Image (cartoon, rainbow, N blue to C red; front, side, top):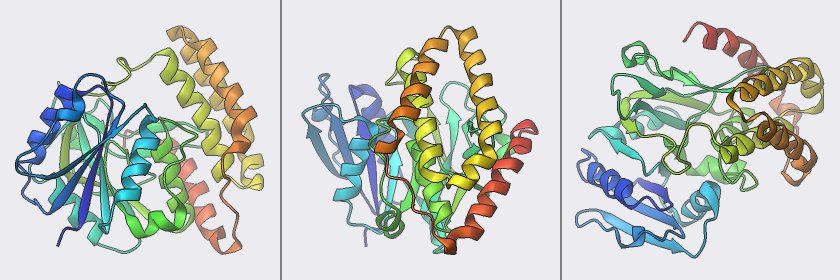
Length: 318
């Protein structure tokens, strides 16, 4: 029985996609369907095939963004689980097997993220799960640090959508990716909504991928990326924090914006960051806010405590 569908969104990444698929052809667990959603590529990406995998290529006429492509993939998924995988990754042979083992451990687990390693320096972490903090910062856990320090499975705030498995039954309850994001922080928002509903997100170090990073945008920092991340950070706050929690956290969130602005000013992107923050605040009401339910109060309290403790986890590189 095929339990999982692997969804790969692609935009003008033919060579990366070909390499990614080759590594999927070497998986120890082959009981999966591969679904590539192409976002209007012009480099011949839609001609990429696999002789040994159950693969389907969907060619969209235009770029709908990461969220649009993935949501179409979710809509087409008929298996109990879906794996999101970036096209700029190489998966180790046990990648699929380990993610399936992780999510099968409990029905209360919504997602499991892989150990994402730097493509060029393969002993260094690219992402070991995402942490969300009181100042409103999303932090890639372990980035740039030795992989040996992150060898234990752990619960994390959310999983990076670049290499993670999701439980489809929960997705149907909490909703798919918010397409208002287009790209960036959409996976954090998804994991946040799952936590509000009482589900867990976990890091599985046995599932390993090597990640090029910024292969589509071209660099770690650029005007579009800084703008989208800033704007979407406001969407995440508006959507997921009840009014009382927002008021309690407001001084810390304002301080977080100030520190980030100063950081991006030094990088030459201060104006892009402020533009994103402004649009995020003025346009946030177009996002669907998570409805507060008294039955989830305990979950909100746990999340608030996690926002506080994650500051210390970041500082201590945990």
